[in-house]
Image (cartoon, rainbow, N blue to C red; front, top):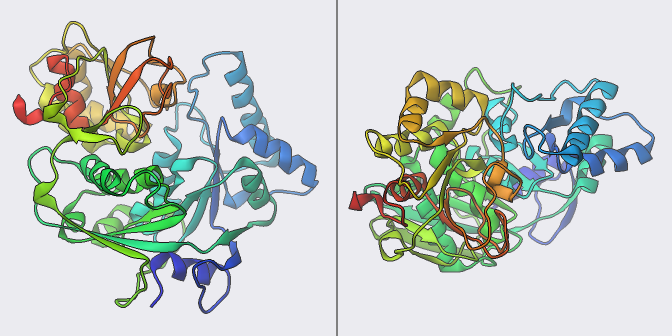
Length: 415
């Protein structure tokens, strides 16, 4: 009767079974920190006066890559020095890496049945491969550095089933925005979202990652998709160590169950200032200043392919700047091989190396007062990508590319 999350937490805590609401101490497989959350974790860890569990720690600079100012340079330096001091094997220097969640998956840290925490709220991304991934604070991350364990309150689990064939240009981003618009940004608060149905089964791994990535935007602790042959094939020759796929029982106890018809899902955007403020892209006739394609949500090769397909032979609107940010070096290299970068450059888009960049309002595309951006990122809160009086519309890579061409929010089916 237990769910995937309950089974993973039971296994990692050495229990036969755990129940929602129970407080447990569980063994963590990996803990990840980035250049922003790393420094406070290092400072807390040093107070423990112990040696770190090196093999469990993953250090990935990505938020301010390359460093944008002295403060970010000092953060990056602190991570570099911590890695050298303790000889941390899993440190990914600039030029070898990418956005933290993409690297965690690409480099084989994420696998079915694992319990992974990251000092970044979008660590729920790892659920796309059947792991229990969740975000923690820097202090908690430091604790895992030291003892490899952390306490958890066992969450309830919700079941989301999507059946049917998707419409043209509908992507994983549209699916998760559709769900969040239905249940709200607190609809899964401290719960696990499990995703099922023929629609999910047909999705690429990239689209599944997008869905799990944005589970936290509904307040979820994690967003898990049962692993299948697509996951196993991806991990073959890539994964670190052994793993065991874990599935919910057929009669698992869910706190709530939701069902959706894929044919009713269309290209959408989330208007400011909440991911739940969703409307059909065809009904939002808003002029844009910037189109942003990238982030841990939608910076994979599949995302770049669909955008390049729409942009090929066309130009970015003269009043719009388009910024394309591959999620990792691996993605960038594949985009080069496939000629996608050339398509973006021919369209007058600006292509950056892997970085979180403007997603968090860091740099590489920060918005000025009253500017409007259509973005494939995950949050559109007040001031998220720059000035508090700017506005961000969340959308799929297809909608971002179409909008870049027309200069206004556009359903790609209109082109």
